[in-house]
Length: 186
Image (cartoon, rainbow, N blue to C red):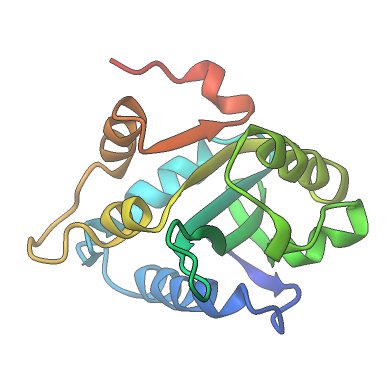
């Protein structure tokens, strides 16, 4: 799943604080026995997913959370997870936050909003600086947490792709990228 020489870029970014525990979970999955699962995830399903991707591509995750500022009653959306993984030959080679894409013209992560305009801007910057986007997932924090950690009470593996497809059908997240043309929701 992970390349032997995985490179983490911009680890000083505030967005890295939310991404680094996920890297720890993936490392544990990779080192444990084949029957080990973490919140419904296992090494086999993740490896199969990565091997099914184009030879060189990227995976993008953007997660926003509603935050109240001062006397603001409605709140505003704050980016809490903004990560890009570069995948080569079925292995994750690099991990970077959206902050690393500023050189490619992406606005500051604190200015990114959930919506089609910023989603396209993110994917364009990723394509220019990293690789074409195979899959981009944009969602809210509650949906992200439910998808990522949703199987904490059960043991065993859960079809996370099926769970994600249900969230898409419910309008709880958006999936974009070159591989979505090959994916059909039932």
